[in-house]
Length: 323
Image 1 (spheres, one colour):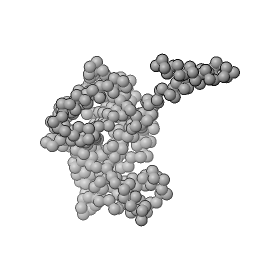
Image 2 (cartoon, one colour):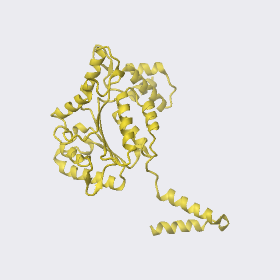
Image 3 (cartoon, one colour):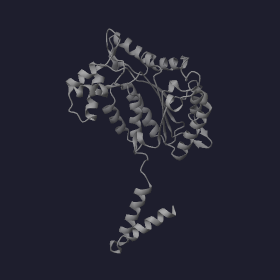
Image 4 (cartoon, rainbow, N blue to C red):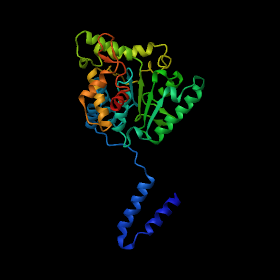
């Protein structure tokens, strides 16, 4: 620290006295801030900004958009939350679970998903060996504790949550309880987001049944056909899921089990159009429609919903660009 201050003084000494004391002070302060204090803090939370971001960049997920907006806004504007915010996103591949986690991050942190306060863990990547569960558990506890100790409004995203070892899920559970303090540290201001394919088939079945009944997909909501309850039961009773063998579910510490619906052709087309913008291409509706229709759809006869959501849309578009 002394060396840094000496460096600042040497730099300041090179500024001519004619610039005046205030100019010297301003130059020194600016140098110190820019050099030693990297900006990676919180943004002023704006509910309208989050609402617009969800509306503009999330396609076909009216349920998730509604629940995320309300739950995140309530949490971020609560001066004294009594527990961390815990959201569990469920759905098949490519429907926007990871994307929504990134949207939340960029509306909270100056550096968005790239903030050092946003921590992403992928089950089979970070914790691949079952025989090392004790080691992983100790490491995970230390990582979470250190992160929240230094920055209370930390965010933790756990991908492939259904594949995570039960011991690790129980390690996370200790930080999620009401009025929880772990080693003297409060976790009330932290955010935990779980991403999982668990329950995806149940959500898809509800969507297909609703379509066959002649109802619009947009008529589905959290309480439609007991969707949230069905997701809860599915992940709780799935013998192959780490959820079932942990105590997280039966302690009711997840605030919302949020369904991500399978996407229709029009939503996949929107994804393709968004990719065109991202790639600085001229927007071409006909090309977007062509790319979208090349994706596989289900049920086999009706072909209503995209099997892979918007996953691999960019790759499909790239093939068309090369032709």
